[in-house]
Amino acid sequence: MFYNNGTIFQTTFEQDINIPKLGENLAEVLNHSRKLYEICNFNFEDYKKIIFETDEMSIIILKLGEDSNIALFFKKEEEKELKLTAIRRYMTRIEELIDMDEGELILHEIIAKEEEIKHFKELLNEKKDIIEKSRNEIKEIDEGTIEGDIKDITKKLDDLDLECENLNYEIEKRENEIEQLKEKIQKSHK
Image (cartoon, rainbow, N blue to C red):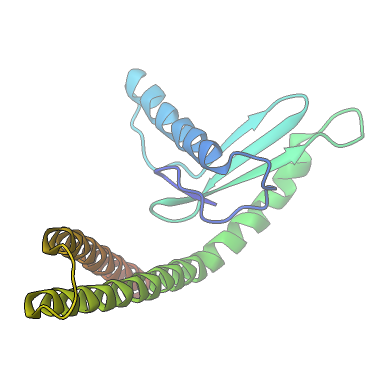
């Protein structure tokens, strides 16, 4: 499963596949399809499915949500030919499952973002502890109880403050994304 920007958020591929590159190329497929429609002066609406079929492989890309998609890869069976009609039999069922699970996917997205927020808050607390220790160190240098270079510690403090600002920004960004996802769930239940 991947977003329109190419970020893959769930896969069954093994580690030996370059997952980020795969996502990037899947997103390019969507963008190229859109451009084809524009070149031909066709009205491009959100697609429902895109199917590629070769002798060895069939790839079906289905639209999940506003920004999410699923790509299904089917290798050629041992029989002489892989019939697309065999895949089409399951398409309706897959689409039903996708529609049913869209809310669940959004929920998984929210949970992932909440985990990111938790991680960022832990990092933020670690940085604040280091800042506090560094400030105490500067105080001890000023009082003459220990020797050290205030310039180095001040630079370190400035860097840590900047990192804290960035972490706060990332936390706020994720919180906003969560709110948008919650609104999306509420809209779909109306």
